[in-house]
Length: 180
Image (cartoon, rainbow, N blue to C red):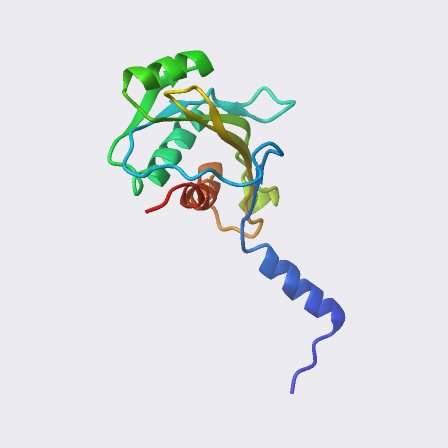
């Protein structure tokens, strides 16, 4: 029978925790429970401006496109038509584009933080913060607002990127909004 010291147990727990990415989805106080949206409607997905690391001059030019692409992938199982913007748009322009596309809903993402680190050798994890607004295009009413925060695992062998932190929370988020 093997005996594991407390120190050894803590090391094992730390290593296991380092093997998984963490996610946190926070709904604003105004929107305590998710609205129920209708499946099969057209959704317009706006394109966010690129994200960066606060305090650094590093801008991740593809981060807005990668975020919108993950949102589009998350929506495809609920909608027959998903229209994605070709360029970043502010709220009013995105709402006009959504109306022109005959969309029922506008999904407006904002990449607030995007940090791609060489975790495998630096030990610093990738991090993201993305805010998502869901708007009823017909009325212009804000239906929901959520913040998604993600941190990559620190025990990695390379090949992980911030966009990899989006798939699960976006899938979970849209499954909470749409009835199938």
